[in-house]
Image (cartoon, rainbow over the protein chains, first blue to last red):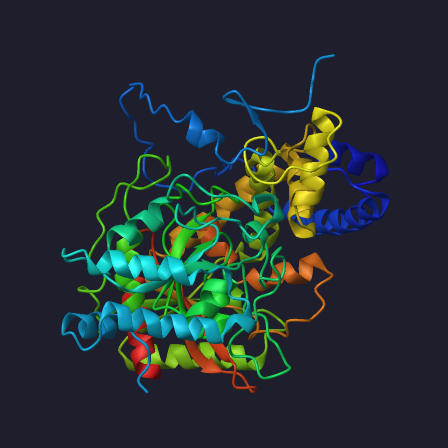
Length: 95
Length: 474
């Protein structure tokens, strides 16, 4: 078993997702069966194979390095759950 | 009654056989009659009437003027909320318009509503949506069927004739599989043909916008409208977009079709193998050379996909943190608690499962073993196609390993659910264009789909083969 209670807690913490005990158990089961299934990739010889990260055959285009003043802070803040004087507001982080 | 057709409707509008108002009021009525199917997450009569008013005042000629189109609720729209079928975006009102929907607006189309999908496009049955299941319009009473997914709402909207076309997105089969389940046409173009700008991201190296329609001609018209270069998407391709519709040619004489032997999978229902054979026979009669090809790494496509897609998703979905937009939990005694509770309460089970697996395969010590390995196998899968396409002009396969399955079928086993995409995922990994067209029925009279795959940016060949098969089937 690759994923145990400690591992799932670590991944959940890295993902910033709180899990209750029941969920943890379910995901331990799910993730182990998925990982076992994907392990068949080890049958494939990938020596000297370049990893494929971008399938697009076109070359990434360049653009002029110019600044644009869109002055869009109101737009950006429009959907914020909490905002204060032109900023996103979050719970206090410094005592 | 004649079959619905966008092309025919454009002619009817042109010759004043019908007005934009009459057409859209017809569609409004139809939509209201089908609310029980839960096809739309957002629908507003007032909004549609406003669009009609605006178009009536507009004297310019526009290619899709007055045509009712449904939009998958993964595309950001200024005029309607955008949820990605997730609680975490329940109240999100974009302040910008996606590239694809802007193109459709520029052409004068009318947006009838935002269609249901699997949460963040993660699913194959439109059953992971926060807003409930969509019911396949082909269901019999009391026997609801799944519409497929993730773009199940868009496929169903076309199948129920609630619009003359719909947008979808396809990451591993999310356009082609629901098109097959609902008996409509669905095309996923080459990766990079349509800008991803303004589409809620799932797996960026795979996500691609596309079209659902009543027939291949309509798909060729609509795809041309949404394709094109956009500098705001770094993988958007600078290619000329041909006039697919004008160039449609159902004469396939002298072409070669590739039939991959690896797509004969144990356990595939007889009916599916049968329609595949039927399609090959039709092509043979049309003078197409049949070439048996091999795509040796096919069986590794699904496990490759289920490493790469969750990995990219875990990174893309990091942005939903309760700070910038969307849902924020009430239980927020500290910043970390705000993140953890917001994401715990805002995401559904399948989305969390994929974020967790993605985080794991990208985490220190496992990156090489899983993610890098999957990227290397992906290269081999893409190379398989490159080699095969030296010997053939297009490839024909079934679209899905089954017809639409019952809505309430228990899908507790994630791997079993992932197998729905067995025929569609390889082309997604290789970035190739693929279309699904209705072709034949199963014993319950449910539609089955045939998939046609083409070379990169050879959508024209895909459309030509599709229109040819469609015309011989009708």
